[in-house]
Image (cartoon, rainbow, N blue to C red; front, top):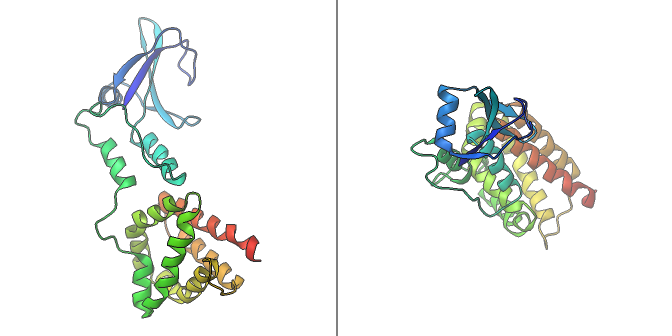
Amino acid sequence: YYAIRWPTDGYDPHAAATGRGRALFYDTAASEVETLYERRWDEESQTPFYTYEEGGSPYQTWYDDAESLGYKYDLVLERDIQGIGIWALGYDGTRPELWEEIETHFTLEENPPCPAETTARIAHRPDLLLPLRAFRDERLARMPGGNALIGEYYRLAPRIERLLADHPALRWEAVGLLPEAAALARSLTAGQGDALDLFAFRRAGRFLDHLTGATTDPELHRFFRKADRLLRAFAPAHD
């Protein structure tokens, strides 16, 4: 939640420092970008910075904002890191955007709509939720990054619900796939002996492709790609 202002030997990213840096609060850096300087982006470090001249010498100020912190929070969720650290609370002043980014990544609606439950209700097959929940709790949650993927699913559930509501063909594809998804879950959960149906596996992969193609939401794209990689990770052991 702070920035470092460096005297440098140029205006390009990663120019050499010519002296000691000076710390600024985030709210100061954000205000300077809004009123004085142009925000620039360094693709290599995935962080913003801005440059200016003072006394004939170039200066660069590097900091984190909501976008760059969002990428870090994505990594926290992806690698199942159990928290984040901030130095220091209050450095954002009264600006809301950094707290809003935390809320976007780490809070759930009190009772978020669950796409699997809605699909089971439409199919009149609530019994098919049992193997899905068993797979979630007994297999997926014990895998590296599994809890993060589960949390991401519930965080994104309202958006997935809206996507299915806006595309009835996808909703009915989900309804048709539900029995096969339950069979896949049974086959992948320890101690349950259904043989893996590779045709169902491929249909599930196509469904994820269809979901990805139906949205421009980058977070949904990333989640569907992770789910597809999970499917593929199980394939060799059961082929």
